[in-house]
Length: 332
Image 1 (cartoon, helix red, strand yellow):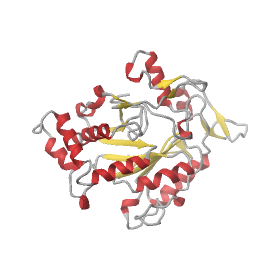
Image 2 (cartoon, rainbow, N blue to C red):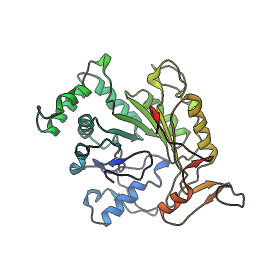
Image 3 (cartoon, rainbow, N blue to C red):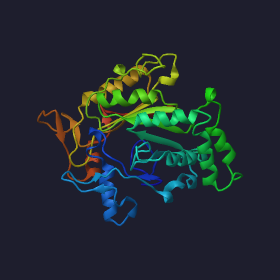
Image 4 (spheres, rainbow, N blue to C red):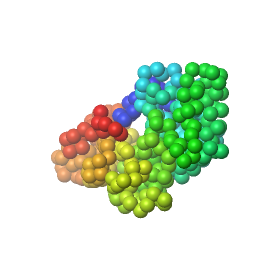
């Protein structure tokens, strides 16, 4: 965790909040709660009391903590980075006070050189928070106060510019351009629940992480919420506000990993190609399609041993022989 990351689609992780809770099937083998328990064993007090032992291993307790020592880290990173926000938590977790979120948005406003990648499973709360930011009598002035507080002075370098990035009249307000807001969706049920709220959330870039992908997802079956109309989430119609700007797909890795059928990944790849949405294939995880791994014809084949890195290294990132590395705006 820090200014370098092994996660394929980002450059760094930033964890100003610690702690979470299990909310859906995709959480069952969450690497973060296992990592939190391991860090406590190494003497890292930040995560003390945030997990508990169970028959299935460490699980989140539902408690969350603001990590003050980590809050200003992006301001010290001068070289532009893509930064995954809260890889060890969920920014919009129900136990996280709005005031903490204000401070995190204040830091993101003060660091325009970076791109911040936010993922949540609480899409309804993210939508409500950003809609409140749009209102002039809502959270705009609270984020502005947090900017001044974090910078230490109203006249500190970059403060006025940061204010302007989060200010504006309700009718022409726009979200921070360097913040990508996304949801995790592991199957059709979770996609149907979360993506409509994402589409209605004011955002410069909207994205979906379908990882761990535990079932097929047909994005054409997901309707835009009112008042955006009834067109599908991926159809490239005139209403560009409702487009999804990026989709990431990945299989599960680590102990107890569940297999991802290759046709699920292929389908999303093809949907993205049809709609012109950038597609990123992150990993196969612990399993590969038959023919790529085992010669006995089984539909999925476990590979490697107990080491997470060994398994990922063996299975790789090729989908039908191609590595997909597209990002919003351009392929990189």
